[in-house]
Amino acid sequence: MYRKSVLPLAIAAAVAASSAQASFSNFIDDATVSGKLRTVYIEADAKDGKDDAGATTASAAIDFRSGYIFDTIGFDASYYGAMALDDGDTKNAKNLLPYGTKQNFGKLGQAYLKGKFGDKETNFSFKAGRTRIYTGLISGSGSRSMPSAWQGIDTDFNIGGLNIGFAAVNAVLQRDQPNMTRVTVKNKEGNTVDIDHVIGMEASYKFANGLSLKYMNGFADEYVKGHQLIAKKGYKLASGNKINVEGNYRVSEENGDLWTGDEPWGNGFGEKAETYDFNIKYSFGKAYVRAGLGYTEADNYDGKTGRHYYDFGKNSYGAWNTWTNSGLIEEFYWNGEKVVALGAGYKFDNGLTVNYKYRLGSSINLAEGGSASESEHGVDMKYKFQSVKGLSTRVRYAVYNESGNKKENDENQVRVYLDYRF
Image (cartoon, rainbow, N blue to C red):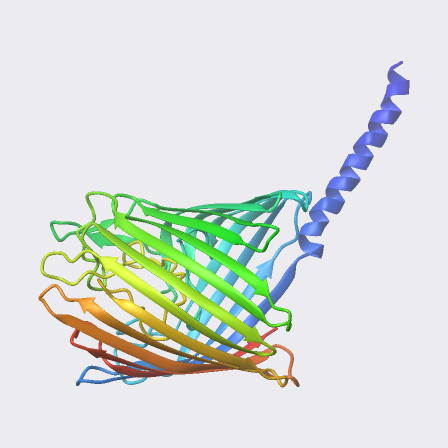
């Protein structure tokens, strides 16, 4: 009896060992290494006697993506490095390099465990470690020499078209700093303290009629919280043209004893701030035109004009998903501000895309009395080289002016990017 049972067990063990070996080999066999070389030039020409800013940098990003052990668990990592080609002769390198020192540096940008479960219809995935996160109102930046990253967990769950995401973070790797740092704020006594954690959640669903709804939130422990609802609906016309309608509602509120109203870079709000954005886009052929209306209410406080603050403390990044209020240089979200935005664009056959945007913000309710206004317009051009795969460039020029507020500075800004992906 014993001898008869040995053979099936041996066969089963051999099959299991072979399967495990094949699965572990997938970790390497399915792995990929890719990267990006980037040169960035930013020049901010400040008016009214203010200091100019900017620099020119060269940077590299190397990304390792593993396969999955047992089609479930893997590991990814990224290394970033940046160096100055021209430091701009100013302390402020516009977040291309560390402020003041503007030193060259390299860093471990990402290092995280990843997992996936389920099938095409119902699935769950996660990342845990140092990673780029865009979940809920937790966001990041990839518009400088190198991207930012968070330390935490990021999950994504899909079932029957419903997408649910959850993220929790407790430290941030800034785009212009070599080391991970905590998210900090100044408390009511003026002391710098750490935010224990930031949590973000989201849920989205697209209906059969083309209507899509998305809800997002973010909570910085004992500091500030925010919620946003986005609704979009597309219409196809008989001519083949398209109309897309979008509405946004965003609200932020104090969330505990650490909130003082003063956000790290200047004005915040008293207890509450709300922003409304409605915009419509008409696409015809390879061109489009777009128009939007926006309005913000942000409580004035302590003699300061309220502004809708959307980050989660110093060093952090929050999402700002409102087309009308978002800009090329400044966001328009002051108390009482009414915003009109107009845009247009065209995609050429040769790989060139040109976009133009104009915004006017008026009726800002100044805490000291009276009102202020601001305006901005600029062009954003992108080009993918047809003869060299992975090579692209982007040029952006914008002009910002304000009247009566004096919180922001008049500025002309140009950005030039040259990217090569491999």
